[in-house]
Image (cartoon, rainbow, N blue to C red; front, top):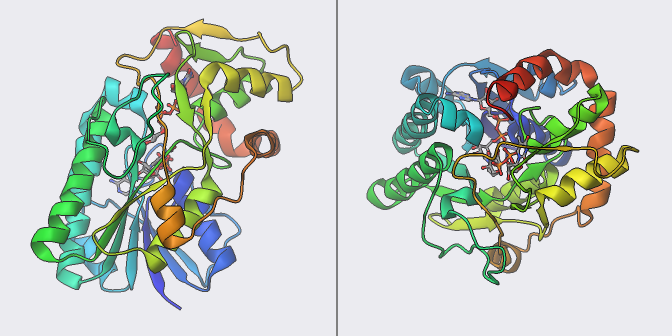
Length: 332
Ligand code: NAD
Ligand code: TDX
């Protein structure tokens, strides 16, 4: 049995990971979360108090981080400013959390010699053409497009430098787009599901040809646990589940699954610098560490996610109006 520090554990993917750890291991968890607009204590509701403790604080608070690192065996670092659209509006918090916050954690990992796993994104590799047969691998050069992805790329490079320069026992994973329960309504899939529930037409940026490579958040969690247990120090692993779909197809599938006409959506102003396509080749993780995704069927995973948003309106309703007002002010 180990004690894990999970940063950002009250956010979307972090809270899914905490649920996965409680359900599949006997580890204890300390969640360190600043509870920004994206953190939600309700995402941790129902978890056993003797195994999960929430500490509200900033990963850039070196004194707090030092104290927490002394209490745990390993650290899984999810905390981030995570939304591209917000990074185009106000980049500063992305530098503070994604760069300075990660630096603060790495200094503590170095001082306390703690195993450290850094969660990152496929967006660090930039984007691919629609007809390019290539997918991202661990050897693809970094080429981020947005303030969000450039700060995530910067944080990845800090981790690599702390491994090489100071011997920090770290691994990195870069995952594709996640979907599932507890995802903030600012993001594409929950925004459209909750729009349909509210009687608002879904909003597709531009022509909707952009491709994302979807993976269920629970599969992301099982991959991270695998890397934590069996990953080689200093290595990077790409996480993906062969789920490429364009945004238009996803919106139409959401509408159809929710009993609406497939064309009942609006095209709105495109995102500035909008990445065209992401696609992950996760061969290394599958062959070297033996990981496999459990959710092979996007339609079923999406239907379960729609049910979750239908059954958990009290979780998302408090933020829905503010998010839609923000998008409306930008013609989106
Ligand atoms: P999220 O925005 O839902 O959650 C982020 C969490 O971090 C929130 O609970 C927030 O309160 C917390 N946080 C933010 N700043 C903090 C700070 N300074 N100190 C402590 N806590 C802070 O994000 P998410 O979608 O769950 O993403 C989690 C991680 O996974 C991020 O590192 C992101 O880059 C990465 N990732 C996300 C996706 C995706 O599809 N969402 C895909 C690949 C990788
Ligand atoms: O209303 C919308 N309409 C729309 O067409 C929104 C919110 C998005 N989109 C498009 C933009 C993207 O092509 O849908 C796609 C997905 O958008 P987001 O949910 O904002 O995700 P993305 O920008 O792809 O980034 C996500 O995956 C990688 C996460 O937010 C990142 O944290 C992660 O690193």
